Amino acid sequence: MNNGRANESLAADVVACVESEPIAASGGDRVAALNVALLVGYVAISSFTPLAARDALIELPPVSTGVIRFAIASALLLAVLRVWRSLGGSAPQPIAREDYGRFLLAALLCVPLNQFCFLTGVSKANASHAGLMYALNPVLVYMLTLLLGQATWSARMAAAALLAFGGAGVLAVDGLASVAGRNMFVGDMLLLGAVATWSVYSVVVIPLGQRYGTVRAATYVMVLGVLLYAPAALLDAHRLDVAALSGRALRGFLFIAIATSFVNYMLWFVALTRMDVNRLSVAANAAPVFTVILAHQLRDEPLTSWLLAGAALIMSAISLANWPRLRALLRR
Image (cartoon, rainbow, N blue to C red; front, side, top):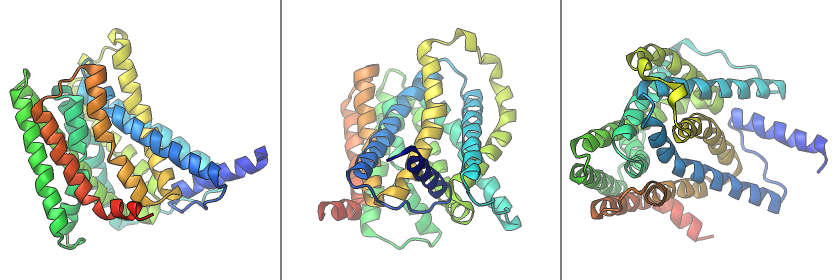
């Protein structure tokens, strides 16, 4: 492929990602290899994110870290929108007045509430618990959409919910039984709050993505969220000493700011435009398992019987919740 055609393909991919349009599958083995690379990249970044966040939060204050993290990610997403416009993307659709409140709610959920709970929680708990708690997201989204009348009752999903919350309860017991005790339990509850806020955000933002384009809507949400959260940085900005940061803490922060909040976000939505959602969702749910393994191997986090039991319950819940997708893949 010459450079001209390569640039045309790149432009088409960027525009399709921003406007949430499917990318035409062509190129045979090359496309298949790229799809595998997207999946591996997404799962790898997702798996390492709790470890990186934990490394950063050992030395960095959580509120200021959340503000700076999303300020960087917002700037990068704004740059993507600018590139997209230069590649021939359509002019942005004006935001309808009736969507102002939804954007405000999405921004509050995505940045101030979610980041406070996640970063404060991971600073008190550990990477394994953070990874496993976030695996609850699809079950919580189902429960929320059921309450809103957007989903139908399913005995399979009800069983998945029971398993998921049973697993979360076992993780809480694991936290109480640890050396950190009450502090880790508080961290687990904050992580559960982070998953809950992210689940609500996931439901709130869907109509915005459908109207304004997924990446554009999320960029607006992030920028507004940073503006709303910025004043809270005064709570712990006095503890921010960049010059004294260790290499591990700095690498952890850069990872969650750039790799997690920007690169992985783009990988997810490019992947959605290129491949079957069943394969993508099933692969993404492997991340918590890798997080537990990596946390044990790289950070010496103990594999207690409570942790393993909680992980087994949560992963069983996710497998049950995704059973139709798993079955669709197995039939191929």
